[in-house]
Length: 111
Length: 109
Image 1 (cartoon, each protein chain N blue to C red):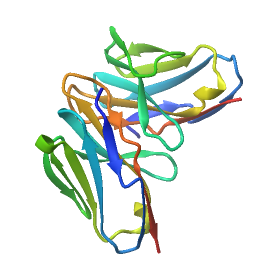
Image 2 (cartoon, one colour; image 1 turned 45 degrees about the vertical axis):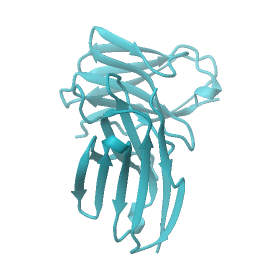
Image 3 (cartoon, rainbow over the protein chains, first blue to last red; image 1 turned 30 degrees about the horizontal axis):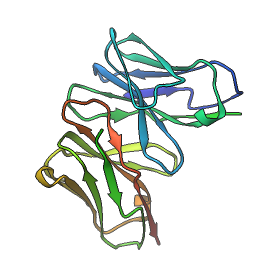
Image 4 (cartoon, each protein chain N blue to C red; image 1 turned 180 degrees about the horizontal axis):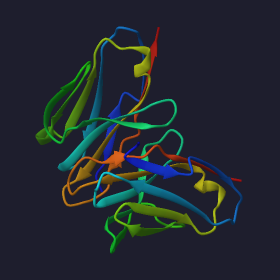
């Protein structure tokens, strides 16, 4: 089984809908991250978490919220989706100061 | 924040050729990684290399931290090497990777 999993893998939704993307990991890492990738660009950091009680904003957090339900679970929510949030979303994990490992990605389309 | 620049942006090669991809970064780093994004969008970790040299089969990487650059070498290219190669770094004291815009590599048979 994959160490970092994301659900759903693909999602099409409509403008104004609330949507949640979920990430789970079995690597035992304390740090988890959410990134967004737009076509032709590299990934950009949305939110990150050092542990269950610690949540930090990244470069592009506006319009997003997160929840760290457990060490192994980190969810990303779009409270009211808009078309420019159409992108490929990645979850990642790491231990302090070490290599980050990425999930398979969620392709989100907002109509 | 840290700036990460990759070159060239696009590269087309014949199967069997060798290539060098470059990554320049604007500040000292405590993490530098190279990734391959395949045509299905998956990110594959190639190297974790904040300094020094590593090799893995036909791929190798070198980071010269004092001069703020990293190089990824691909030898004897295969069509399966096609995709986008990203360099990403974390500045000392910060968190979260900053990605370059990638090098789009096409290997033709």
